[in-house]
Length: 328
Length: 309
Image (tube, rainbow over all chains, first blue to last red; front, side):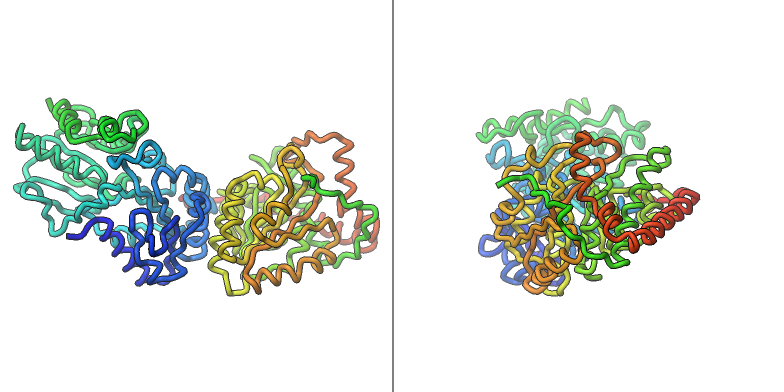
């Protein structure tokens, strides 16, 4: 088995070996440290100065990445914790995203900003957030999230191909999980990738009672809830896991949906799920039994103590309750 | 130490006779921007504009020190920087007026222009980190990245993040500081503790400050320093004690008439006119006529068309 973080590390190795123009920079990314989550391990030893450990200056790191991209060097920037992407908001929103369009013609800015995100690790309020929602709806800025289904190399190549700045959120707990391969999730579920979206379904692919739209970091908690709902209530759930969160891609399997729940780790209010619902409601209005259900982290800071953190973040138990309430 | 730029006594500084090409460029920028202010008064321009009246000599002096392969980053007050880099007044005015032939289809307007290695943005300090990234790719090629900032820009944290990296990574970065002593309406004494020199020194970055407005003198001072940026791949902060004789944007000058009169004494325009009327007058007439033609021609063009994002 390959862990998600090792898979991503391998993809970065392959990418930098294949394209000598690519640069990578971020705090503590050089060997022997290899990044706070070891995703950049071995890159400096192999690619030298194309891998650069930086001062603690998120805004300028992203700006330097944009400058490299502007000069024709695709750049990957690591923000140590997604929470710190707030420090780079100006470079992301006012420079990188706008520069692709505000000069009256398409200006390529091949820039990927990687953001390890999410909680359930006890890091507390400023090292646990999933701040995707703050970057949703910015013209020119695409938002992605790592999943255990999507090949990271293809994902990165696809992001660079947009020639626009892309944020890649990477759930920190997901790092430690295994990549799924060969269309098999477990004894109960299989998956397929359709148009860049992973569809996770029961072995005999029945029409689901509830379709769960979830980003990569939510997959295991959603699957856990889906298992229990199947065994305890005979409720059939299907998961749709888009690697690209914004713009929301075309989702497969919607022709047979009964009810849709969007699950995420962002806090409630102005969340990614609201954007998904905005896109889906007009399309599904006549077939949905009720409005799309949104569930995310509580509107709260994320506590450090594990028993308190669990209450704030979305866990399988609450997902089950949300689904049962929605389809009852 | 004082944050206020020491004023060069303009009456005592002898301006050497200007080369005709330099004077043409100075006057092109001057009349271009005076025309912008007139067009605004007539309601022919929308939005806002920031003129560099009095500061035109800075990019004109730097012009021959910059090479084709260099990358120039400019700011909100960038018309002079642009015209000194690319003598394309038609394209620039079309951009500002949203007419066909605009440099950026009229999307960017006065503050956001990207044209042949010239890029301007409207957020203070934002271009410095970008310039460091671009300069990384120029390292060892002999080319450099030049960034124009003002004294007010030093309030932005991005400046310090970028200077730190520029020095650590030894990138060929020329930071041109147009220290006109006023950030919009706030005098330097109220917005800057210490000095630009002190801040550059903190990063171990060479700093040069000039009070001269004499183009030949400035070039002689800066040529070896700019050559060192290229040769040694090291940043340089080149500070100009300069004077903005016009408003921050349009008619928003809150300085007293006495203060405006004091800074206007530094204006190269009146000094060249007084010292070298025989060179100045024909150039001045030529520039006025050129800009009149540009304004008339561009004003008559159809609106610009944007293909969309």
